[in-house]
Length: 213
Image 1 (cartoon, rainbow, N blue to C red):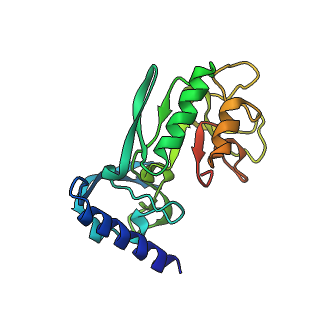
Image 2: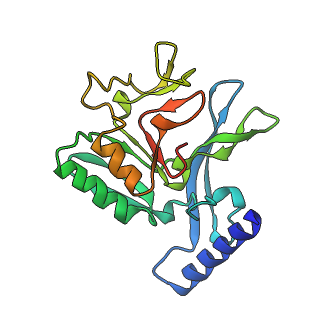
Image 3: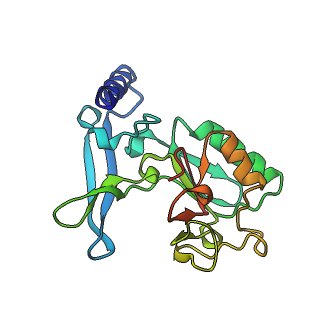
């Protein structure tokens, strides 16, 4: 069923693009793969091809967003570096973040679309083959240097090991996100799940996405 859904999405995208001369018919993106043996990013490359040649793993099956930069929209907010988000999510996300900033909520940095194969199966060379949610423009990281990604963290405590970003100190740091805070609450209201509530070994306090991962 998922295969047919993805093919249907690709067909619809192709028909829309052919019918709309103002829209690009080419898909382009820059990506890399995470190597689990070397523990670093490898195989940096640029991809450019027709939309009709998109594969299943290049389209998010939940939202229909692709990894093509042509499907992303630039979000501009006061005093924040512009970032890209999937065009299907951009209008509501931009208005929500703009309102939060207007209310005085401490949003200093946002990272959205960035393509990389960091998930899924591992090939014979030790490279991950699945794209992250950021790759489709359906995830964002807020105040990364104050809301880290931790492992060994089924529940938050001293045993949690920081992998990326800065330490999460919601009781001391105003830039650390809080479960009952307005930022988390408003983003959850429009359909994003918070990485701080991921069930399992990891907690990603900077991260929001449609699935939470």
